[in-house]
Image (cartoon, rainbow, N blue to C red):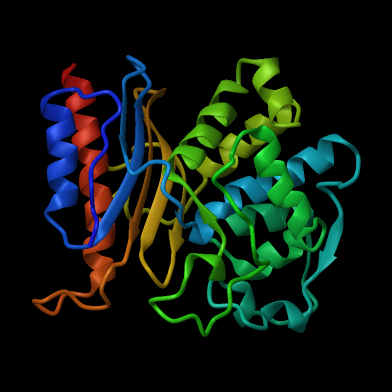
Length: 292
């Protein structure tokens, strides 16, 4: 298995520590990390194509907000939950609820992001097209991201091919988060995303509202603000987010594990070590960047 390392900007002990965390496992870990205090970056396989799982939803949200900005969609549009939305869905809570509930597009985006609810994802994605979202990513500079499906098939095997799912790169996801962050103070960055600064502020707040606290936040002090989106794939786990300290953006980390065994040699589920690896990478950044 190739789990090679490429660090674009070596930074001594920090780079070594990040790589040691990854090298301790037999599966592949790719990441793109940026210290927002110094601009220093750390990359490992950051341009290698990898399953996106639900990290793709950040770009779906931004494509939808672009359509809102252009007047093609309305965040206050009323959407009725129909039974068909729950077909082939394996995440979120709406699939267990009674059809007929009415929510807004704004609420559907919230559900898609903060609980990774795929009923809500269908509601959002049905107001766009697959080609529109894929083209949106390419247009803003996410050339390594390829949206291939509305919702991935449930019957995927753990050794599925990359072309069976939406794929991305760690660098693309870190870039998207950086641009959303930049858009809070830069009209030019907001324009690059095709949205207003108000809509970009809404996007960032929605990422901060994330309820699932595994991976990136898991080893950080309780209450640490993290604007992030995770993913659960058949081949691994992934998480991409902006970590805050003392109210200010501290670092961006996009980490993707791949080729994760169902069970480790000692019987521990592979996903447990996958999430733990991402948590350890995040904590290493928290400690090292604070010390600097």
